[in-house]
Amino acid sequence: MRLLFQVAVLAVGAGMAVPNAAAAPAPQYRLVLGSAKTLEYRGINARGDIIGVGLDPARFGREEGFVIKAGTTTPIFLADPGTNNQNAVPRSINDQGVVVGNYQQNVVVPGGAEEITRPAIWPGPGGAGSDLGVNPTGSADAFGINGQQQIVGWQAGPASITPWQRNGTTVTNLPPLNGSNDTEALGENSNGVVVGDAAVPGGTLPGGDQVALEWVNGKLITLGQLNGGAWSEALAINTAGQAVGSASPAGSSLLDSHAVLFSGGKAIDLNVPRGVNQGTAHATAINTGGVIVGADAVFPDISGVGNGFVYRDGHATELNSLVKRTPNVRLGGATGINDAGDIVGTAVLTAPDGTVSTVGYELLLT
Image: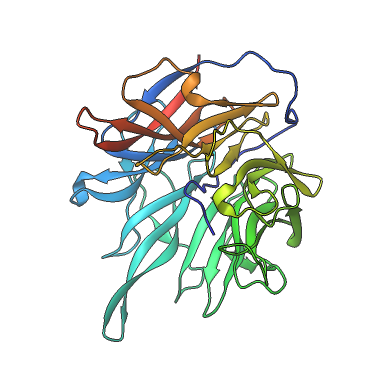
């Protein structure tokens, strides 16, 4: 159900312009590329700490999660909880620098061993990670954390995926969509309002129908679809309750999803620039001022990373048009934005021989 850039980044908020409002002067940014150790940036908090995934030289170049402290450029890799575990993936960082995400735990099974996804929390850069203890004998993941240390995610049972929210040491199972065997919590705001999605029973679309969801005080609400469509997901929400994500119009599946804002029980298309056969687009984060970032697909493309965009004052703009061009560098999908307007995501680098690699990027307002 999750698309490539689903990241729950804490964002607090007030009002925003509606789509197609009068244009305002486009902002200009200064581009800061991450080091070769970084593969992608996944989020940024209010003080400018960045989370991402990169190649950890201390672990034989294995992919691991990291934190880059505000004002620095050096990735501090996260320690995997326990022993013989690996592949930490940070998904959210709050304004105090606490990180949640997942790691791969090695478990013994009849006839051998396997890895399961486990939810984890890290108190900050350099701190040891610990397992959150949700669904202790099975798979689970943590997608969001706010300033009150409330954490949300999903857990896998024998025949279903269900959402949960953790307050202090208490884990509460959030109600799943009625009849669905796959309901996920993917983000939350500072008020503890949670967003996510669920598979719709009896769907007819290729890959299945899906609906964006919101939980307010534990009560489940459907956020709606785009122009009669049957597929949507909510990825982030700010304190004002403005949720963003992705949705497909009538007759289309997730393969033709559009970046959207959810309002009044329906999805509103952000009209991200999309050429012929542009494929999917999704909004991944929204900040206090209602500025939205995300990604839209690129064709042809061998990197698997779409273009980044920013939506503000009623209009979406490709990020590559807002920075001084750097040869052989394309700004891919944006995955986080903070209240200062700083944006992070993944840049695609093309070498002279045509090989492609990625590093994280940060855009600073000039």
